[in-house]
Image (tube, rainbow, N blue to C red):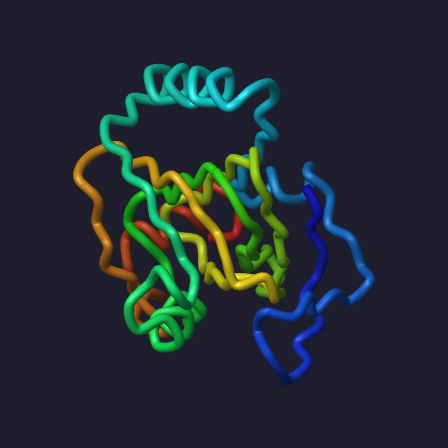
Length: 176
């Protein structure tokens, strides 16, 4: 796992935008981000995902492949994914192939960029501001995991400020 503060420079969102200031796993945990690197063969990793799903009561999953060739309206969708938003459910992603970035806001409202690659599993809590983009490879295949039926509706900032899941999230990290 490689995480760092986003440099906030203008330009292609798919560039690294690495400020040179790293962010530790402990710092990510303090804002509710859970990261795991799954080991072993692909079958071993799927067994680990199955165990997590049983332990956390995740009931549904699907796969998404994001690339210019595989996703209709690619450029439009990648811009939509990069808009700052929250969800009312955890966002759980297991990276099957490829690479990309999840950006999350820390307690001081700074962007933290988390680079993900094959075998990474990331759990982003409900109510945290975040966004997603591919890197310059323009390809990722991920398993999306859900507690119930997927809720795809992003709630963008500033509308999300009064959302109960946002309020609960802030309380959970000691920022409310």
